[in-house]
Amino acid sequence: MEITDGILQLDGIFTFTLGIIVLFAGKRLNDAVGFLREFSIPEPVTGGLLFSILFALIYFVTETTVNFDLASRDLLLIYFFTTIGINAHLKDLLAGGKPLIILLGVTVAYMFVQNLTGISIAALFDLESAVGMLGGTVSLIGGHGTAIAWSPRIAENYGISNAMEIGIACATFGLILASLMGGPIAKILITRYDLKPEHEEPLDVGQSEAQEKHGIDYLDFLDAILAIHISGIFGMLLNEALEEFGLQLPLFVTCLFAAILITNLIPKSYPRISGKEWPSRKPAIALIADISLGTFLAMSLMSMQLWTLIDLAGPIFTILTAQFVIAVAVTVFVVFPVMGKNYDAAVVSAGFGGISLGSTPTAMANMSAVTTRYGASHLAFIIVPLVCAFFIDLVNALLIPFFLTNF
Image 1 (cartoon, one colour):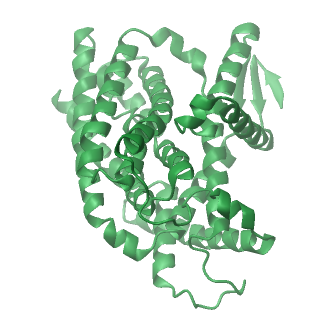
Image 2 (cartoon, rainbow, N blue to C red):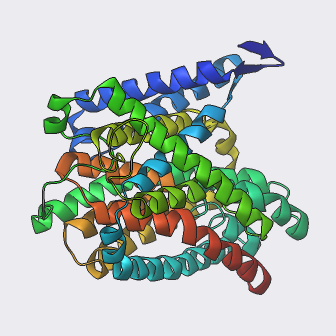
């Protein structure tokens, strides 16, 4: 940890430790503030926003920028999605076939609407349509990664010198809005229609109060880590093989698929060095999923540099306001009805709230907060990550150049 030219650089272990502190701070705040708990605001979101504001105040008072080494955060993302794959059973995948296609269709249609909204509002301010794209799927449904990837090309081809700042600003505020909208939407739907899970089952992420009473031993935990690493190794090999054929996917996506394949192709009775069954839907896997997702999101939000967004008000906030209103309307009046108006549909709606303006981890955190309060939804935890972690990136890769070329 050192300060050079007004930049405080925090190394990996310090950043990881601070992420844990942020997560605890979020839990304490949620426990103390009934509104946050009642509307299922994820604990890492509460803590992460609090600390990002704190670091912004440090910047304004001392002109010192706090930078973080986020390598451990990216590893946590791989851990999390691998646990989702380990929990994925073939019968759920088959059951998710039709809902998966429906959700994918709605999401693709929504992506067209999101880009048209951004472009239309940019035109009202006499701005290039490319600016509207930066307030569309480039930064919102695409997230920070897509914004960072496309901004230099937009800056060069369309003469928008601050394209990177606009993209990151939209992605950042979109992440905040997405984190705050999923839980309240799910609560309203669950309360209004008196929805409940069809069966009481173990959670995909985290543990219920009943599960916590039984606990897990260190061998259960270590066996779950081993399963995650085995799946992760196969995921890395799969990722390298796909790259040889010219298909580039995020590593967490191939780890997710590798875990799904191992879980469903290898019999439960297959002998393992641990002497235990493959830990699909075991408490240890759920616990690791909870730790990984919570700490990842806490580190992502605490590292946001809010002060870089002040000069980008005006049209950017107008675009984001319109996108937020449309996202809420689509979630409540389209996603929930077409997904069946049941408990699974409410949880999927919470996830869609995270996808629509934020990122895959935001969607998963929204659903985790809802299911921890109301009960498991295995279907939601299968179809939402497949749509937002895999298909969206492929569709967006085609959609962005189409809109930039034709609008």
